[in-house]
Length: 179
Figure (cartoon, rainbow, N blue to C red):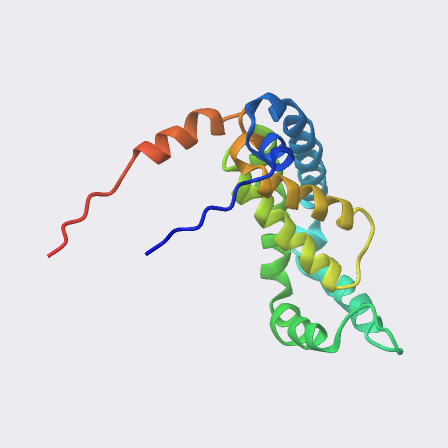
């Protein structure tokens, strides 16, 4: 069987694989991480997010999303509104906690540079859902920067805990007996 090798371009190799550019990804990572941490921290301890009225703020947000499902070119697609109405809205309290702690965890992981690729992926997943719910704000910027951090996962955490953890994980192997 022949193998085909597609070489990575020099620019892509430099941007996404070269430790010399890790300082740039460090700045991007800190910025994105701070945005996530600040968003989650602002919800922590607030009664409508993580208190006795947990889910109230999310319910209000969802009501706004439902209003964006009308018109020739709605901001929120009907299939996503069905998902929000049937999955998220009945469990708003649970999702309120999950969003709050998810934002904090993603922020801390990005700032510390630990599991950077995974943290950035989870951040873009949250951003994608916020965008589908009709929220713009800083979400498109964080989405793009998060996507680039996922692409640069090999060096994005180089100035961070990934420098120590990723080599340890790659050297750690599970030995399985094949019968």
